Image (tube, rainbow, N blue to C red; front, side, top):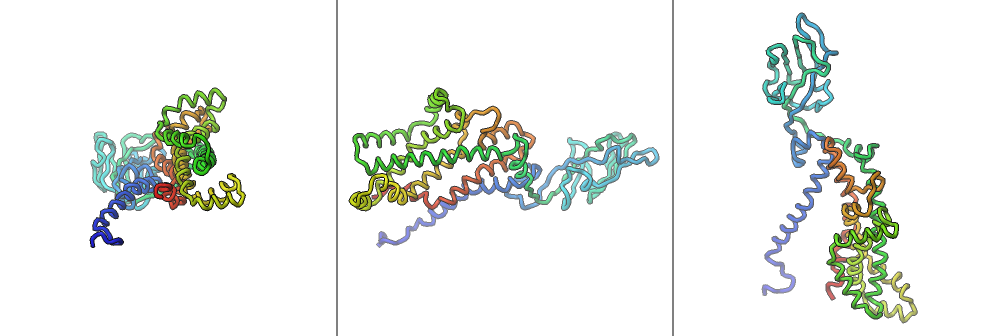
Amino acid sequence: MDNIAGRKSGLNWVVHISVALLVALWLFPTVGLFVSSFRTADQISASGWWSSMFASDQIIQMRTGGAEFATKEGDLWVVEGNLLQDDANSPGSGVTLGNFGVSSRDVSAYEIGTLAEFSDGEETLILNADGSYRYTSVEEPGRRGQRVFVAAEVPPEFTTANYSQVLFSGNSTDSMAKAFFNTLTVTIPATIIPIVVAAFAAYALAWMDFPGRALLIAIVVGLLVVPLQLALIPLLKLHLGIGIGKGYLGTWLAHTGFGLPLAIYLLRNYMVGLPRDIIENAKVDGATDFQIFTKIILPLSFPALASFAIFQFLWTWNDLLVAKVFLIDATGETTVMTNQIVELLGTRGGNWEILATAAFVSIAVPLAVFFAMQRYLVRGLLAGSVK
């Protein structure tokens, strides 16, 4: 009685937990990248994305007013103001100030509200909890003012400035807008071309009788295991020899060649599993192979077409190697997003906080494509596996 059909397995909960863990492993990095893309550099460096909704402890460097804000009181120069209001580096309102210091070697030397004496007593500073301060000096203060390090509890902060910089910045080293459209220019044709070619080839290998068909199927299966790297240099030499190297056309053809074996194999397995009676009835009614292909096979093969389109789009969108080899451009006019992110890493070390934003912009389109077409993914991948 234990093997009665329809009885649930006792290990069903193990499957559910395993699936939940796999989903979490895939989802957490994406959520973390999304949250980090809206955080400031100080927030990112102070705490992880999982604590972004809570206040974080930070060491903030600010400056008092300089010589232009100083007034003379007897033998002393005095500067008064509010660090939370006057300084451009201030984290704003809602901040709880802790200890402070005037040297990076001891950033919490003094408690809030106490008198800090330094420079052999020639300078003093009192910093209050509301950010107001009084700085005195025997000598006239410098133009930039006194540097102050403050340990503060900063409330969570989110900003869209990172996206404005990445998407709309006029600086080519920061903006991803040009690279975004370049990537679309590469990806869309490199997805459509192999699907069109593979669909015709798959129909011929599935339903047309001609000499050498079995050998061609074996060659297609064999090409699935050929490493991409082996063909890069010979293919680049061929492209340069015929004048299509270092441009979009060469990149499209390269992606087409590398994607065709899987496309043909996947579509052929799906098409060969379609009902034979439909095709034979169409031939009896006088339909040509082209009419059968366009009016019967293609509509019925949409799940397999969509499945390969997802894979090809994701591979092409996330590709860096083929773009580096076949899309060489010193001016940056044809730079794709994966290469632009590498450039951000190499040239914009000071603006590292925009890397999370640039990375999320890069994965946003693949995520949208995957979720829009994922219902066809399993149907297409399992095509031809069960008779």
